[in-house]
Image (cartoon, rainbow, N blue to C red; front, top):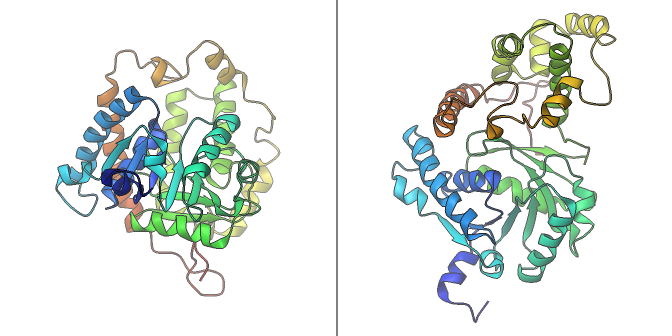
Length: 338
């Protein structure tokens, strides 16, 4: 990098985010609001311009709500640098977060380029929600430097990020990724086994399968199913989680309920017909104007802003309840090894 202009060397010293799509740009916001300068890379200049416009708006929303280390919105925005040249973006970046499309071949091609231009000791992390970390790492020359960092949408608000071991991931790689997340105010949860869906998506998918099955069977309307979730166990989840809630209600009661219900809960290995039909009809959600609900008469930016405001309210609840509970031996539980 000695022959690079000084600006490129400045860029290269920052963590790099590869891919300026929805998740990449939100990870950039999370990093900037958390006090870190980052480089956001994409080969598509139009995608970067769109990302810059959205980041400007999003940063204003979250800083106005008191997130971050400063009330200076411009200063936070200036922490994000935009790049269309990969060598300038990754250079000597200590951490490189790949957030490109969920396609193994695309990701493999990106990793080849990253390894060609990144420092040999750089930590490379993938933001995947479903692909095997071990399988993705198999395309790298240095799989021990590779891990998963599974962010959740919207990444600039949702507090937890799963940090996932692959079969060859070194402990220091996970420590580096988790340390970065902690430095920007995120709560890393270490996933020690590379299981499909990791932790949250496995649990979320089990819940979603049953919700779709209930809708498919006509048990209740979509509105009432969602209202039942929001106003019952969903209402408790930010404060109690699943396992701690079991301790509060009594594990004997929890055991009885599972014994009665497990045979009745949907266990089909394919999505319910109602979901398949919606997808086949192109009704894939807000981005298409229609999904389960009709979004055609709504303003996308207004809907997003309203969603973010509600999630920011929920974040305050989560933070207030974030002290770890005691484990069975009387010690405080932790997401990190001592």
